[in-house]
Image (cartoon, rainbow, N blue to C red; front, side):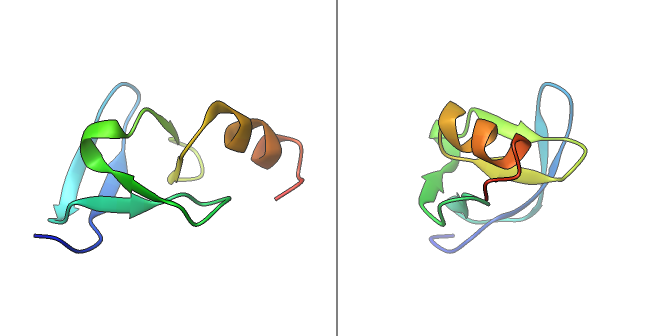
Length: 62
């Protein structure tokens, strides 16, 4: 289970579709361990490593 997980992002949680230990930030490509995943978009179905990455995506900078 050390590879990339596939998730379905929900409002306050996520479902694991394929097991793994991390996801990749949609903006930076940084590996995010699942136990550290805090930011994602339900609409875009994307994970983000930091709040700054969320802002970059929302502003269309990434």
